[in-house]
Length: 601
Image (cartoon, rainbow, N blue to C red):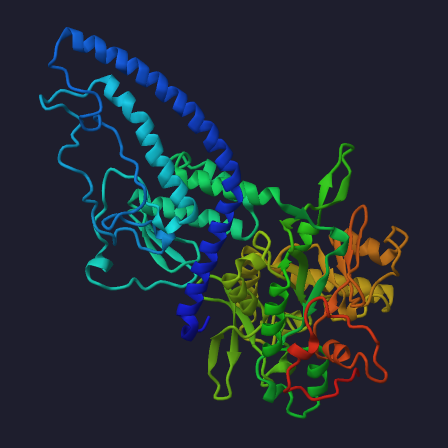
């Protein structure tokens, strides 16, 4: 995320969060109004009953003596908490409304007479408290209704005011990551949320703000059940107005979710992203291949934005289907239940050959994936002067940054599938067995590659095989097929851990469109070593096949060749049908730096 657009990104995040909260509140307001009418009716009846009793009691007290205090003329009873109609000039807003807790002024609204005692120093009687019940209820109702549509005007009800933070007393803005709320308390520093604020966890306001921010993060990724459970299980705030309103909003949203048709979920994929088109398209022998199967940084940025604008949401292959044990003890592949808001559409994304082959050096690509200072995977890239820089230089960190800015582009933390060959190592580390003698850093490379692979998993990425030698697994001899599979298991899976996904090289299948059976020896062998998800390349349409013990899916290649075919669709020799039109218009995305025409070799 560039520093130059820091403030704009923060502003958009805050505006998006506030708009989402307002939408949720409006959606449940009708239900609340019906409940309020019922509550008011009951409260009115109770009030009339209490009033009648009070008048009777007052009449009785008046006949016994004239020294008793009139009901309703004294201050509030001891221990009563006055409910605010909204923050006054001196009250503090919650951090969820754009202000750092502790920066507001102290509340001066309490009058000296509100001590809960009569002039003689005695507590007010029970009758006085009863008469205040309805008045306090009406006051609370006003505050709640005002907060429903104007959340910025709500304030936490509290009988104490926190001192200003050191940052505010010095007149300085706290420096924070724009994607994170830093929560500071006696227990150290924690972080959650997506707005740029510092929250003091030693205060109730700070803890509630952090809790609501954590729940909002979950809900932004469509994990409403987990967000609700988080709030309900919190002993300190589960009964507060803010938590109740948040839960009601999530529940109302859940009621409108639409189940996705698993068989119609598309799958798009990329190869390595071209960061420097001048180097990639410099007329050498590799230019044509790059032009055919790679995607440029400019194109990727436009594709992600356009897919987001059209309502696409990333899901995992394991969200689409997963293994379960049935009542007979048999393991079966069961279709998943992906629930999204109306207008949203699930999509799987993947990237092939994330190995950064030696032939790519100096051609405008990243050189390897590393773990960034924030604990997330990012990329290194070598510059012409020999220095190495770290940043968003391939799909992994670019997509991660996009999701941080657009959390609703990811379903429950989903990212993309990352696929590796093994013959040159993985992730830019020379981990192939052939490098054991010629790479002086071989052991260190293997250790670091394993750590990066685990980091990818921890951050929502699925890992996959792309075969060891990038072989056409449907055509090579069966002995070579088994040898390649075994080498991938020994040299790659030993580093990244078990995986059950294979993305076929060249998109070449090991069978036709009919379901896999145990008569297919190649399927049997892949199944025996643990693969359950099989993806080819078929960009003609979204294609999914769920068998008893596997899932197959076709993929769309979002590369130079496929985009060029969409552009010339109506020209002589064109197919006459756009393939990528559901995702974006190729003319709007295609990088003018590409050599044209883009022809398949």
